[in-house]
Length: 84
Image (cartoon, rainbow, N blue to C red; front, top):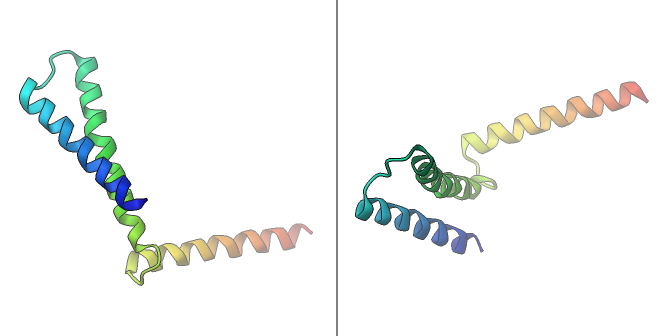
């Protein structure tokens, strides 16, 4: 499923690049905004999907995020224990 999402995002990005290359950059601000959104959406999706690959790895970023998650979980448990 992840590979299909990546493939579809790459296709969408390629289609938008192709359309802008053939038709040129739009002149109206509304159309420019839509083209920017069509560029940004697959780009951010690809970054996110690629980033999910590091969830179970030992990269410094994933270890840092796991540590922060555990710290917040500990804080919440202490807060629940102090209330009850």
